[in-house]
Length: 489
Image (cartoon, rainbow, N blue to C red; front, side, top):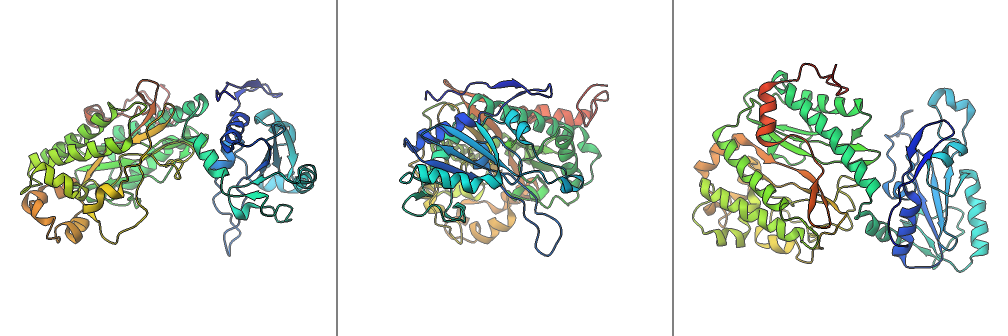
């Protein structure tokens, strides 16, 4: 295989023209990464399960590894791929007529064949005899699964002919590089997220609490048939200093900023967008100073994106810019830039990584991160080892990756007082009186999704930011635009 993804277009029997998700070619690429000529890949979709002691079901969410090789967003399915014969089979549940009136139904075989890029569609009841037949025809071939507990219960496949170690890595190696179909879905997710972010900015002056921000954001996304890629983070004031704050229930009164980290997904592909903005539409002196530092951190890192660059080096660049900015403001004192950098003092205000992959998960392909950390979890921040915790054997960026760049500066009073200001080593670097002026800022984070191209990058995120966003807050809504549908009326 040459690794290229072709566009697959079809017209169904029902007259609808659609583009098929390139599942077959994804699966072929996975087999190539496995580096074998035969064997059977077996992937489970997500099955429906009831909540304990309830007649309600758990919220259903498709397994992303299954979706990557099937394009199927329906429950209770699975697939097999015969590597030697290049044959991809989707197994679906049979429709139970007596249940349709209660729960609706999934696809028929004909509908599934029309919708999905597979060679054959069969019913789940046929899986066990099909596996037994394959085993008879291929007694020495390997059965590839993601996890040990994904092995079929009939014990047809036993070690050493079962491999639960290599399949996940093979899929991960494929998933880190997005094809044109995947990029189009991430781009669309960003477009929807941009509409929702803009709606929040336009109506912010009417809002009294964080819940209204979350409510409007999700309303716009749902109206465009998009789910949330992750829980909405709408932290105002001091709440903006909590990285994954999700209570979203506090009043906005007497607070300066909102950090809104929220993104939709399109056909399971995520966007990840963060904007920080003043509730009044105008930044205070302190907020403007911190926003300028974070803006410089993000813009300086983005402009260096291209294949061959290491995220690790950009991560360190962001720290250097943060240190320079906080030194100029007088938050840091009593030490040179070099001393602050070598001791890792900037982690007091910038404690997280610069970015991550985005795709079928908002934090995509966790087993192949673009920023690697040591696995040791310290009970308190070990700032002296910040360079070793962010390991230097980090991969280079490649064309086709989609990543985030999301620097931030935060003033988490609890954490600063718990560790940094009580430490004999680090407390001498922080001017406590100057610091007090910045606690009301809470935190500033700015995040975009970037596609790595052959010669640089393309920013897929179009949500307003900076002064353009602040102006929208001051001007309010466009009166002739429908808030939910986004159409002009």
